[in-house]
Length: 244
Image (cartoon, rainbow, N blue to C red):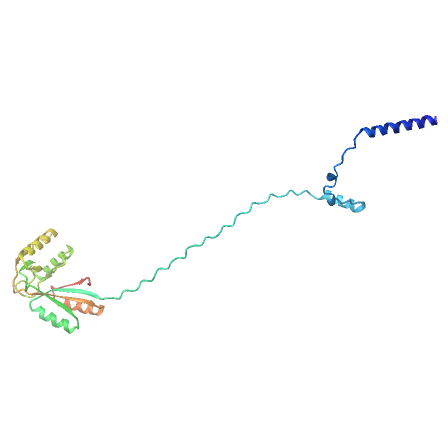
């Protein structure tokens, strides 16, 4: 029996040897086994158990998606507001006036009073070289003549004055004097187109002398003095003109 057992062992060893010679050894990828080998740590004993328990108890936290960064707007340079230049104040050149409707003996009296007020005026005589007069015949009273003159002003007529010299043409309203009849007739037609019905044209009466005075660059005090002076001569007209 002993020799039978030994013979079986020898036969098994021979079969095993033949099988090992016929089967080629399998290649082992050492590179796969060595991958991350440096990161593997073997923990044994109580430290290993505690570490395993700690890992098992930790909740798994899902990684939050990374927010897309919002681009920071680049401030644009705003245009610097241009300051408007301060306008240079224009010097007050005063006020300009025309005082018309001075007739007859009033002319010399007005000249004297203007000089007494230390006012400078340029005088224009109407009638010396004129031959035609456009006017409204004398009215019943000075008050009625003034009312009629106010109506003329409302109609846009500015060249007029009430005659108040106590003479033949007292309370008439002068509407202009002209060098020839053609110019007078043309002016009369313009007046009638505006609605003036009672105006007429006639050869100038030499007894009716007319004058007007122009004033430039009067300050407020001088303008007040002139207004008070013109109020003393009923029928005369003081108008503010555009300074030239």
